[in-house]
Length: 180
Image 1 (cartoon, rainbow, N blue to C red):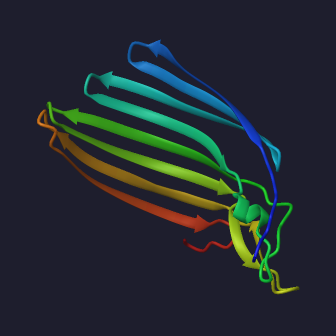
Image 2: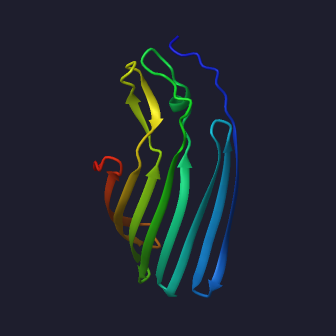
Image 3: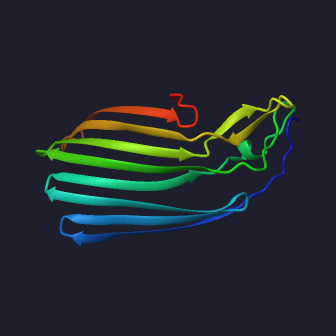
């Protein structure tokens, strides 16, 4: 037996979402989520999308989201002859911003283009402690990602569909300046 762990944890969540039609062609979709974890406490995360449709076949969206990733059981509790536990490990968090343009062309074709910016804090990384040589998980760096996405899609009544997309992303560790 390499590991016999009997750790336990629990959590609960609440989520609410609604859409508000401000004008005939302008809507706000907003939501909020609260999560409570026995291991690290609570986190409140809002999301919102402002959706503008100036013409029947054209849509613009501004999307904001905030989320987290809780440490999993392996990251939280794994201990071995080469690994140690970090009782101060916290969740990763992200704030995301996106601007989207969607265009339908005719009955079968559509296209979209978007710009995005993501700010990730408390990134969980695996590292070695120089004092004792043991490995552990810790909240380290922050990462920023920015880029653009493009897509062209087609769909016919027969069920035949096709899609071509391209994403360019530039990700950088904001502490070290290293590109990821």
